[in-house]
Image 1 (cartoon, rainbow, N blue to C red):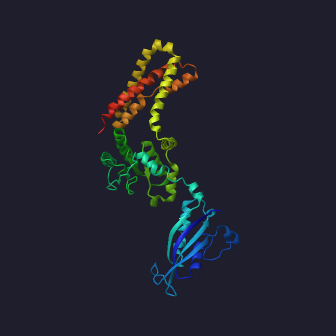
Image 2 (cartoon, rainbow, N blue to C red):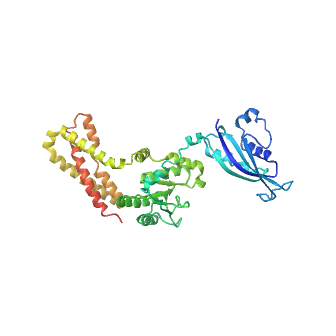
Image 3 (cartoon, rainbow, N blue to C red):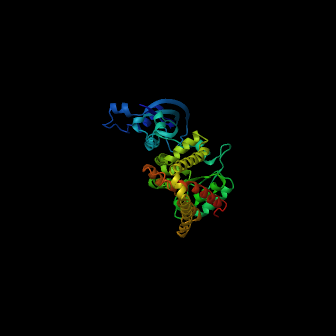
Length: 399
């Protein structure tokens, strides 16, 4: 069975060996008195072991004031204690309780400090570690040849979501790479988490649209576990790239929860591919255009005769559908008091809806040359009109 090793610096008025044995017993199967259930078999399987003792200097003053010594001397040593992984499994809170629990209350010690921990390979396999790491952060920020430049929002508290967003806008325009919430800022009444994410990501996304550079903003999701998960999902939905937690506040279990959530599966797969295939971003537009051209050619070839008869009417209907989607998508959103950026997004979502599902059904029904013609006509036009509108709005950013 694999074992966990912890190295301690100790100071004791007693002999080092029994003091070390007391620590090992207290942090595993032993207690300060013998109990009936502590059998030899149980000790053999679960008791901690003192693996090594290295004597150090002897001092006359204790590290912890008030400790007494019959000899007036205190012996220091470095000891290594080990536990079977079976005692705790791959459980971080229990690991901390084991290596840093009641041992600090033991009367045998006038000084005690954990110096090092050595974990077995099974822990590395159980815990995922950084999902993207340094390389991933550089990919997301597009900074590869210098240190990242970052800052923390100040004042730590008191700013509204909009005030925070304005500060982020100023920082982004100045060329910042990374911005984070202060650990004091989480989900207070004066700056609710969801509102802050929406306000900041509007600025971050708009800046990315204009410049191609997406500032990484670390939103503090530290909270109760259920709330942390909601906060994390909000960041993903808004297009954010970073969540932060205050480890001392949420604990190791909370940190593991966030690591296990990760990004949405598609995002993780795409990131994995882009790291290993750096040219994937440049290939995707070509792949998309190939799909559009291929579908259009196959459909128009299948329905050539019908297209000759009604092609003009189909194009007119597609253009009207497209324009109506842009118009009503935008202005109905504004009528519902959505901000301009959100209204523009909805306009694209509505205006670019095409007959993809109808095309699939048409192909399944063997009617690609008839029902499929509508989508085949609409697809090329929507790419043209969408590009025109996107460039028009890009030159007129929301202020």
